[in-house]
Structure formats: structure tokens, C-alpha cells
Image (cartoon, rainbow, N blue to C red; front, side):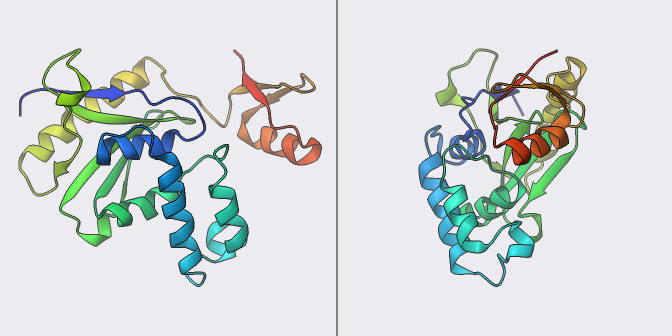
Length: 207
């Protein structure tokens, strides 16, 4: 297979997961509002499957929460979007180089790829050459095609290169400062506890 795997940067606006999925599925980086609606509708339609135990909050509350453009998506949302589009979503984690494959058990014939740095999702695409315009990007790959192995290999090389450059955030140990009261915090756990205790949710990472 000719070409290289490239990381297509998605704006950091709390909707990166949805816009990254929008790009790899539809070449559209502004799909977040629509895809949030899709997820809310899917969850609302099956309260048995999407129970409080599964979602971490009551079904109705979750639906309102995911429609808020300030809220981030994760594994639940990727799983729903894989089913919505009928394609596997491969999410590569830079810190661990692990690939989480959503929709794998459904035997979908096509796959798209994302890359995750601990806080942010970007899109992955096959490009004919470095600096090629995005309109030449291939983002959908046939799972049973022989070339998928080459794509996986190129992708893993990219992910490992990003890992070597430490292009990720270690959410267990990163240092944050509360933007409201300036207190220093270590890791996601402390940040969550601080937010619960104070209602402050404006954090900045510092090194």
C-alpha cells in the first residue's frame, strides 16, 4: 500500500472525540452536535441496556449531559458510534500504544482509526505523501483486505513515534492547577475530587 499514516489534528474544544469520528467517517470535523444527538437518542431508546450501572449516571441525566458541548466522550460513545456507522473504530492510545477496537464483535467490514493522547482525540488517515491535502485522505479501511495489516503496521509506528516524543498526557500523574483557586493537583483523581468538593472545573496543566 502506497502512502503514510498521518495524524489529522482536531480542535481542542471538548468535542474532539465526536469531531474526530465525524472526520474519519464523513470527512467532516463539525459533526459533534449531530453525533451527540445520535448518542443521546440511542441511550434514551434503550434504558435497560443503558442503565445507571452502565452509564455511571441515570439514563435521562446522561442524555442531558452528553448533549452539553462542554462534556467529553469516551468508550461508551465510541461503542455507540461504531454501531451507528456500522464500522469498527480503532482507538490508539499513545501512552500505552494499545489499540481499543470498538464494534469488533459485530463483524463489520470496515474500520476507521483515531489516536488518543490521554485527554484528546485526533483522526488518523492514510495520505499519499507528507503534506498532502486532506481531500486525498483515506480514512475508511476494509477489515478483510490484505492491506489492513500494512495500515496497522504504519499506524503502530506512528503511535510509537508519538510515544517516544511523549506526545501524551499521563492522566494519573500529570500536574494541574485549579484556575479558580490556584491550588496544585496531581492526576485526574485529585482533579475530580477537587471539582466535587469545590465545584471548580477550570484546570490548567503545568509542568
